[in-house]
Image: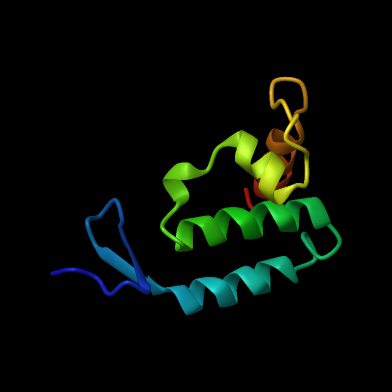
Length: 99
């Protein structure tokens, strides 16, 4: 049985299906972005919003360091992720508050 387009399905380690609607994901994203950890961390907010939106738009497989740098973080076309660690830095900062 196929999941509805606006529902994300994820199988857990116990092989249980977990279905979360896109609206629920967006609501949780807003809650996280308003949290103490993210409230004033604009680069981390931008990184997280961009990656979540791309996954919800079924483009998660296209997420690459260069695209995050140019499209989300405003680096120009000359952005070189080998020389500028901004994407890795924002990814690390974004996840360090949760672990």
